[in-house]
Image (cartoon, rainbow, N blue to C red; front, side, top):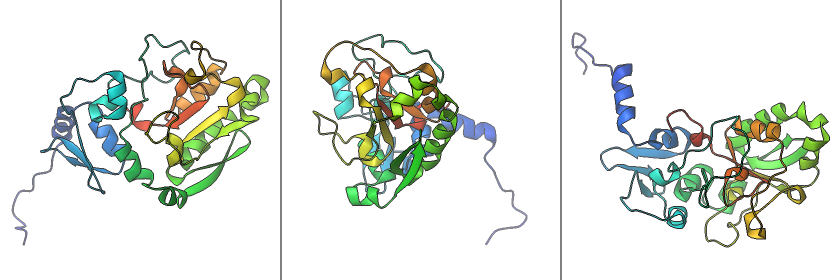
Length: 246
């Protein structure tokens, strides 16, 4: 029973702002975009499957260890460049902003098995190409398509959609035990013959035009060409990395 005469305390915008500020960088952005719960007392994010991911596990890690056993802090250890940043070679051998992913967040949000993911796939047309993607990223892909429409008249953009590498593919990243972003239907590889990939040897190089990269990044997709371990054909949906404050 509520006493009609009792004062009701409503958290102010300022108090909410202070609460958000107390969270480590990136935590609130994960909560905004992934199906996880915040355990503030336990300093962790919790998935519906019971996975507990600490904000910061207190471990000092190498770049490879961040990829293999990441916490929330590791996902944001390197800031992804702001939208519209001119294309340039990465500055260091482990300059891989956006490459670290906590797989538990992606399993909880997009599906933990091939069957779960495939039950939620839809078809969109981007750059004149039909693609199978997760239903949760349908709108971002369609927004990219709208941005690309006027650009596709230029042959230097059109050629990247003539023979794409693909979107959904339930598989692991080559040479690792980590699931690919393609396994969740949130990534696309453009024309392989016009791309560069670090595992193929050689130094960083790029043929993608700035306008094409800008179209994807504007809608929350990170680009593998921003990585020292470069994969210039690759874009994956990572909206948390573009949110202000993260």
